[in-house]
Length: 170
Image (cartoon, rainbow, N blue to C red; front, side, top):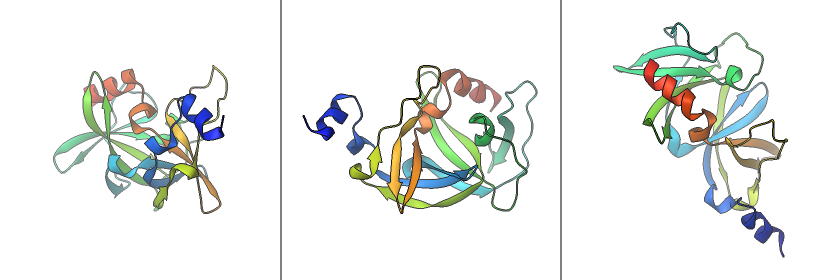
């Protein structure tokens, strides 16, 4: 059996996730999200805090009359918090969940890099890190320009209950 057949049989099909990804940096690591989920990129703006929200939920912003919840991806991924600078920005993405439908969420990242195209041959399955580490939100690992990029599933980066909470906040 060839490696590609074994990969498809294991449930990982790189042809299903190949395409263009907006890449960004968190803690000097590269991540990517499917370009079709991206609505816009804005500079960092003040947020209105929501009492009782999780620490990674920085609050909400008013974007052209629409209230959008904003999360800090560093905090969501349990990375060290850092002060925002001129490179820090908010990527507004559309996410969907079975119970809450689709909604826009702002994600704070250290900086946006570029749009990269990953073909099926450029994508490896996400590594399994044991049962205690959830990697369901990682679509795969993209390889381009001598770099490794963690490709994220925006619909799974936040859990159903987290999306429901953010939907209530907004």
